[in-house]
Image (cartoon, rainbow, N blue to C red; front, side, top):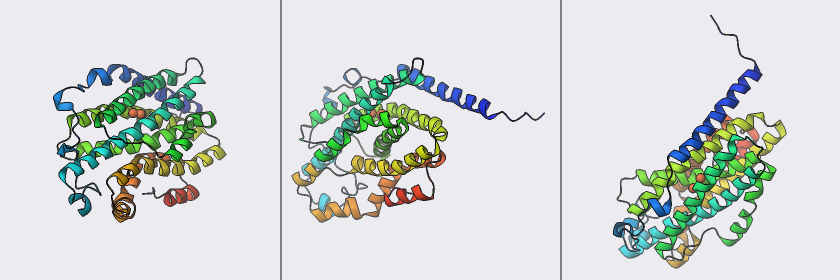
Length: 317
Ligand SMILES: [Fe+2]
Ligand SMILES: [Fe+2]
């Protein structure tokens, strides 16, 4: 016997309960599997101490700068310090992004009605991001390098991010994916290359990847639930804003640190060659937003007009 097609209302109910079950599962997983930086990382273990000249910090050859003749001609100590500077800057920018993210999550949760399943999950996520911030800053402190995070003007502009949920929660979760996806992409890639990693870096990355998987999953499910039900004009506006946000965020997350370029006097043409002109650098930026790009197509945020914006931002496949 063929089952009668369910009505739209029944289907929407089904979708809603599937979505709520996912949130419940993510909340439960946050209780069952989580880490605390000052309990679960043996910072003072001799194996975990950070030595600036440890060759394990050297950039791999697959890194565009790491494979460049200019880099290979430096002393082993300088190569290690440059590599450590890169890692520490990524963590510093990561913790600044997550600071904005936490404030935005709290602004979102502030207005949630009683009984909303998102409330508990968003608090779990905020707490985990609090742990990540401490973990990243502790690492940066232990490198004893004067790394800075986002450049000043950008950092000033970024202060609007926590207020995005007041205008559009959907746009806010696109911003969330814009930061989390590139970080996750890079960390997974680093762990997959078969080089010897410093155990502190490896531990931090493993903890981060495991917890971020939930954060990314929540943002994706939230957008899948909400975007198809948005009024057409709001969906079009989101479709226009998303590639702009994602293109900018990916570059912020993957950009080479200015203070490092100055400190090691990396020649201008080397920087331009490895970070701007190299097709592999452009591919890396496109790849780092790959999963979010697919999601945007799936939920109806890509049409002839918005596809053009993705292309202009250099993040279309
Ligand atoms: Fe995080
Ligand atoms: Fe996160």
